[in-house]
Structure formats: structure tokens, C-alpha cells
Figure 1 (cartoon, helix red, strand yellow):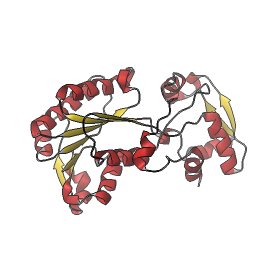
Figure 2 (cartoon, rainbow, N blue to C red):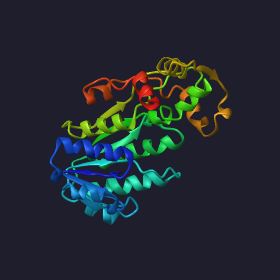
Figure 3 (cartoon, rainbow, N blue to C red):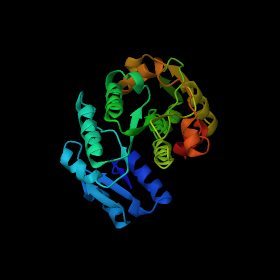
Figure 4 (cartoon, rainbow, N blue to C red):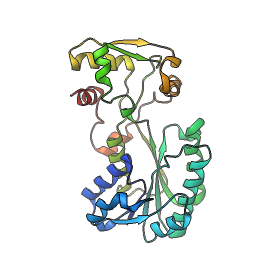
Length: 270
């Protein structure tokens, strides 16, 4: 029996939808803070239970009778909140007798800085729990960059970025979710860590790709981080090399190549 948190979010929904193609609905428990938001899953035979990261008792009841838990990281990035909430979930899973916990961690979680330190702390909690665990160290979502906003970039004829030419290994929410689903059903033993990343590309590559796909010239222009608005912190992480290392783990879990830059860009421009 598989218990899944975060089923009303984008990543969790991909996971549960894919698992429904692999397993009977009766093998799935969808845990949501507001079960009404997962009513469609209940209509399809999934056991929908209430579970709130800030309500340990609700989590123990939600995880009861399940063997594997997908713990989707909390969306609350307020300092100190995630480790507390994740600790509640891990303790509840231990109390419920869950045999394996898969956690949606993050790239660089071995020694995370800033908000990534929450994932470092959660991985430590998992190690200390004594429960077998699977770490899904997700890269950043490619939707951060590869989205319909690129149409405006093509129209302007210029892609501005502060990446300093350092490559990124972003991957889509869908493919990271499919990777998580595959990992859950893989039957791993012991503690496992997957570095889930996409193919490497630079913003200069993206500008060239937009030119090829759209048929209109798009120039790449390097700018300082302070000229990128709310994305400045992301560019700082890119420049640090956080996303510059490749990994074949996601490709192996998917059983096929991860979507390439040209295909992804063409899809959002279509």
C-alpha cells in the first residue's frame, strides 16, 4: 500500500496519476490537508485521507496500514518550518509502521545552503529515523524558464540572463513526477539516493534554440543579477555551478531520454 502526500500539488498529482496506470487504485492512499480537493481521486477508487503536516495525529491516521510513503516537501519555505513539518511526517510514518519513505529532496541537499538547508535537515531526520528511505534529489523545474513567457522573448528578439555561461540541468515537473513514480515502484532495498536532472544547456543555447524553432533571430545578452528582478537568487545559484553536473538517474528511471531543450522550447512556443 502506497501513501502519497502533496497529491493536490503539481508534482504530487503527476505521481498519483502515473501510479494509477501501474497499480490498482485500491493500493493507493492520497493524503491531503483538504480531502475535498482530491475528491476526483476518491471517485476513482483511491483512499483519500486527511493529513496535515502541522497535525501529527492526522498524519498517523493517514499513514496507518501503508507500506511506502511519498513525502512531498512542504511548500512553506519559512526558516525552520519545513524541518519541523517533515519531522512530524517522518515520526508519524515510523509510528504507523511504514517500511520505506521516499522524499522529494533537492539538488545539493548533501550540504544545502539557504532554503536548501531544509532538505539537508530532512535527509538527516530520515537517516536518524532508521526507516529505509529513497532520496529524490530534484533539480529545479525547467518551467521556471521554459514557459509561455518565451513567446515575449522571441517577440523582443533578446534573451537576457545572468547565468555567466554556466550550464543548467533543469527538468520538467512532469518528468520529475514520473521519475518519482518509477522510483516508488522499483523495489529498491536499503537507502537509495537519485540525482534527478535533465540534459545540460546554457541560456546562450536557449537563445539559439529559440531562433531555430521560431524562425526569428533571438540574441543572448548577459546582464548583472540585479537586472533580473525576482530571479536574481536563481542566477546566483546557477553561477555557483549548482546545476552544472549531469546525471543519468532520471533517464534510467524513465526508461528513455529526458526531454531535450529543442523539444521543450518548441512545445511552449506552439
